[in-house]
Image (cartoon, rainbow, N blue to C red; front, side, top):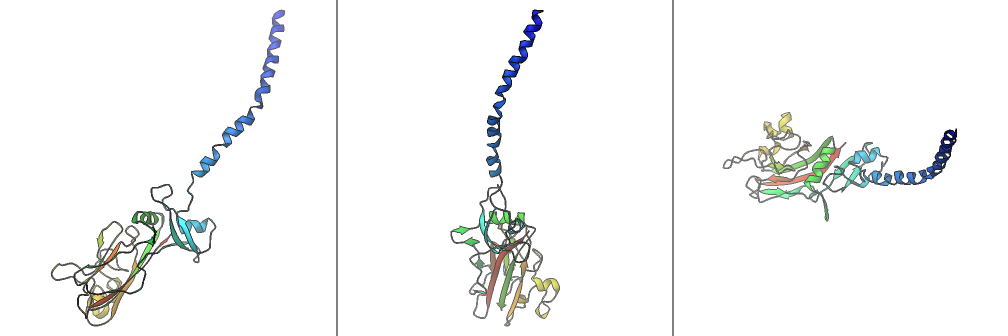
Length: 252
């Protein structure tokens, strides 16, 4: 009968072990510690002005965005227009002056307007802006060319080149103007058949001593923003032009 006595001592030993269950204090410390690291893994900045608006910031002004999150591109400053109830992302550049004079450039594309996006010391690269277009559902950029005896989509007899074109963020040339499909060889009026005097391409292609203008939005999101605007046919005193390139605007 001594065996049962020995067996009954075992529960006493087991109950003593339960006193070590005070260890949960230590367990709680180790499980909570990783939480700050996990939270820090989320992007510090929103992707676009639309996402900033959705997060509760509805006042127009300057903000910093990071369109590709943890991608290789650094965050950058933009202006957010919140007045429309959704948040529009606007990127400025150093060539926003209206009607920049184009004179003394006769050869096709010999005048080059190359905007620098952002501000001095805080320039925004084409890769960063490309990430913005990827994060947006619509982007556009306004262009206007005022002309007198200066053609655009009309071709030079010697080279066969059009006098005007624009270059996309990849460095690829496109022959069209705002309001017309990419590489259509037309301006907006050429698409709607409303160009001056029945010209099939652009008002400026009338190429006579009469003030004309062609304008509209370039809106191919996969190609924007504009890297350069190239113009020509302003080689003599009777030929002149004036170029306007608007801000880069994205929605979504």
